Length: 504
Picture 1 (spheres, rainbow, N blue to C red):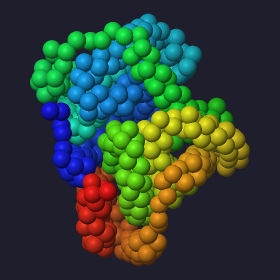
Picture 2 (picture 1 turned 90 degrees about the vertical axis):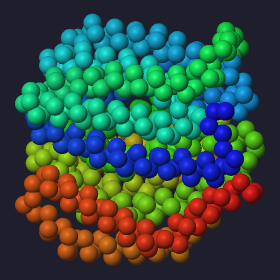
Picture 3 (picture 1 turned 90 degrees about the horizontal axis):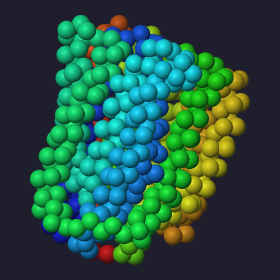
């Protein structure tokens, strides 16, 4: 059968193994690619690539009316009932919607790239990059269905293995371009499309062999208006929440461009890249928890949801302290390694928001529970409030105290989201905070912070980018090992607590 497990604890432990094994392999590859590109291209060229990618990402959020993301709810529901005919049907509905909407947007990007280049990006060279990324957009969105399928059935091995293949090939093409000294804005952009074709081939092979042939090939698609309405109505609610969230993420960048200009927007783009580093490990966990929360809610297993919320809150607080400390000490080194001296001002922005990462970690837990227990409308209301607050604080802080304060405005928004979502869930999912555990990690973080600042940071002076990168990875590993050693008893209890879930 499709990835069945005897218990939730078995599922958690086995899935997490693959999540973290591949995540720790994949994460450095992405930043090696960034180092090569930022070293070969000018500030303006890097901005063009990431601006086009930002537009493509924005369009990807709406092009299928969020039907793809709704598969995380409906596929586990039908697969648990072994109703493979309905599972195949919602897959086909989503695939048809993706083909239709992606084709329209793809054609728009192909034939209107000159117009967008002149009137939106205000740079003629961006027309060629838009043409290239139009193909990336089409295939990325079409085969997001396969990736979502792996997430929804919680097959983290295939999902992360395909992701690893993707990163290997883009790294290969990037190094190949750099080695033969043919690197320019166009060839680096084309590398994104080259690996996409290879990634698509592997994704189709894995999906067809593992799932389509044994489970879906003989099933008939149900062409039912009622079934489509059910899928679409849920997707529409998620779309509303997604739209608000996307707007929140775009407010800072657009206001910086409008108030300060393009140069400061370049620095902010790189800051966003730096701040996303810890989430490369955090986000896969939540993508895995989507169908878990959904399944528990359908079975009225509210106590299990509360237990998971308490466990994750406890450990995410500790992880946030360790991450914030490491970032606060090494932000100039990280900015220098990833982007070079020409982007060094990006680290200044980081210092204004790094300690607010805690609220982003915690709000992710709450929003997963709200989203996958059918409380999407509440999410929309919360994010809408945060958007208004973010726009007001952004306007005054950016105009008065430069681009760095835009990051503070964003994290004020994250605090509002966490606070309101916590209040909404407080009565239903009451958790207890382990203040002894939290205090221990605060003290540990403070000691490591002082030690690193006095004895380790001076060691990085006058080192090259690649040597600094190697030493930073080594020290970060040692840093995390100390963290694991100090919390060794809690980590052993963590496994035990997860195992307890099936006994309740």
